[in-house]
Length: 327
Ligand SMILES: C[S@@+](CC[C@H](N)C(=O)[O-])C[C@H]1O[C@@H](n2cnc3c(N)ncnc32)[C@H](O)[C@@H]1O
Image (cartoon, rainbow, N blue to C red; front, side, top):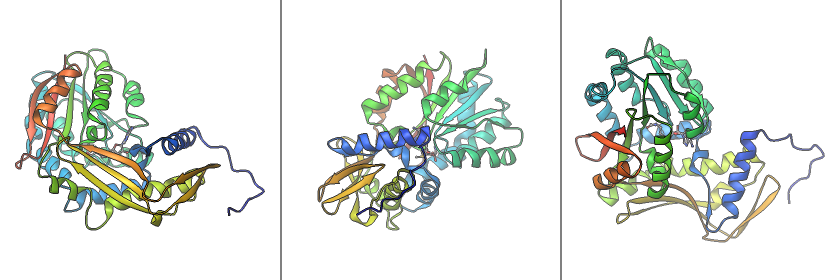
């Protein structure tokens, strides 16, 4: 039984109202789902940074290698199209990889304006505080909010090209069909001649892929379960974390790596005044991390109004940062 208190709960902020609406909508749907964009509170940001350093999570190492070694080549490929540009980064995270590109960008005199966009206010505050010191002269204009809202807000200076970065295989958090919709929307916010630098994780040995989402230290498990803790704290809910199992899957024929939380018993959870029932063994879909083939990447560019300029790959050939031109 829940304790009933005499003091009414304070009204929820707009962001929390949207969070509550999405959570209830997802958990009242069949099958149940939660949205992975809510993973990133302060604890989620810290866990994701630990995941990026764990031995099984090859994605960060591959993309880091590309940016450490090939930033000069990436910047020259961009400069061949536009001599100067504004840089906008969707879901910048801690920018630990992009920082290599940003340094090269400044060295090549490509421009000073950098607009990191992230849904995590914690991350934007951190970038705003640390980046200008790490890269003198960089004009950091952090934007805290949803990808598309903030991309629109970043605007476009007259006569200045834009390069949008979308790194870390974040496009993999959309299904291939959703990715077409999302990138089509990005394209509509750009002008012909603008560019997109976008990271894709490639299909590879299925064991390698699955291990990356099922690390031995249990960091990815904690990252998924942390969303239940966040819902408890922010939406007045009473999830018992240990009554859910982290269950990652990978389908090598479609390239879809999906994470679920499985209810370990019949249970009911209160969330912001609503009651949600879970059956024993019922899955809650948490996140997709889609793996691509080179043909799939080319097709995605063609379907969303971009033409590929060049692919930058790591030594193992596991990851691609693709540079596309808005047609
Ligand atoms: C997988 S991390 C990648 C971070 C960084 N790009 C990298 O490659 O290391 C995804 C980042 O995107 C942010 N994010 C997720 N969904 C978002 C959304 N809908 N709008 C804006 N930012 C979002 C998260 O807060 C997180 O920092």
